Length: 206
Image 1 (tube, helix red, strand yellow):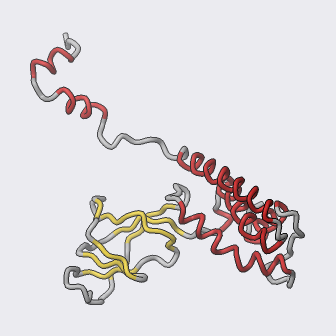
Image 2 (cartoon, helix red, strand yellow; image 1 turned 30 degrees about the vertical axis):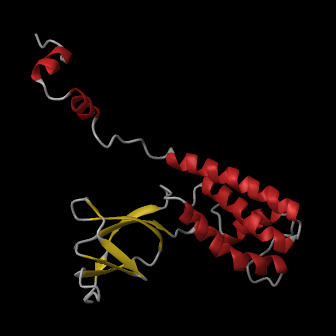
Image 3 (cartoon, helix red, strand yellow; image 1 turned 60 degrees about the vertical axis):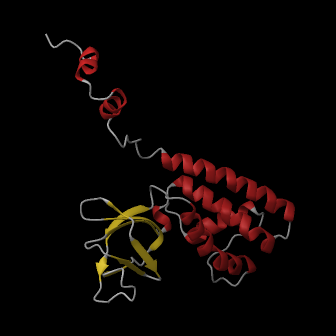
């Protein structure tokens, strides 16, 4: 079954030894606390790391605005589901570093402009390792309000740090490692381009 805000909150409440809820609006103290804390806990966890599962690329929409800063000529609008910017690239895929983000706008001298960013996802799209970390984080953050037991908060915080570390490892294993420079070029760069030296390293062709 796909997870939801309420199901994740209930698992956090169980960790606190508290009663579960039927909705964020059921009128209980637990529901009021979870509805207040949940979105910030989720978005904060998404912001911590450039999660592979949450990173996406998108072409930005160019506006007709004229930048106040004369060093820029283009104004693009940021996506509405953005959590954190990872970088900007041009149409050829080259990184753009000369830009400024203000509010929901990007000022640059490049068009088209593409963004790579961490997006806000629906809970049904969270991988299990992220859900486990989110449950632990939420439990640590709501415990003081729910139980008032400081020693339990410390234990829950320690558990969250362990879950966060494990989640980062799991997420990092989803994409294969990539050599920025092909191994052959690394070797050539190391030995130089002297033909006699290269000749001694090559296998005979006949």
